[in-house]
Image 1: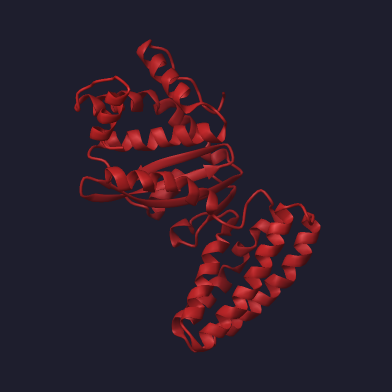
Image 2: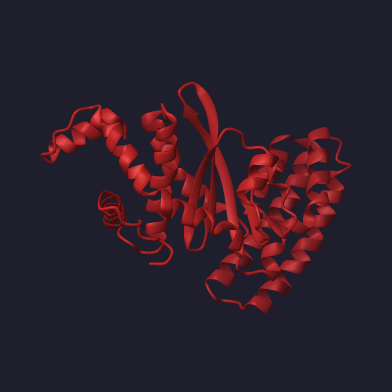
Length: 288
């Protein structure tokens, strides 16, 4: 919500404040949430599994990036000037677990296990089909294997098959998909050929989830976490100050983490503000 929308909303419940008081109160809340935000940020290196994604955010007329990290017990939002290798290395510093992401090259710095988002790969195969001719043939073959993969995955999630049965179904799919991609390298369409070659170079990253059930085959967790921020961006069009940036990343981190941990976000934020006003340390979110 914009500052004016917040002012109007508060007036509806009987709280009348000046428009200039809204960013001041946001700044107070942001300072109160600094400790929980740092607590969650410091948890990233210890995580066994992380899903990561990013999107744009504006500071006045400049475009920044919001990096979102999702673990089973928490979600972190961090707004950075550039989403490059140097910045991401600093955010992920010390992390050696499994990283789930899209196939963006900015995440290639991670030396541990990676899981590429198979939903993105499936959409890539649709582009193969849309290009027609031999590319279409390769795309259709690959889509057939993906349909079989998703069917097996849903059977596993519904507990219709066990992990051993799932692996038995996946390995033939993996072998056939590799052959289709090799066929695509000679299909005659330059873009499809390049895409097939890239997928074959990173082929192992498509199948990490088979032997590591703690990671999913998609990056949906991070994409869903960014949806709330994207909706906010459509309303407020970004931030006007550095303090506004800090408020956005901290309040979203706390609200989303509270949701995951079945905590009341309103009560937690209130307790943080009360602790700051009384001179006490802010309560920790992950320890609760």
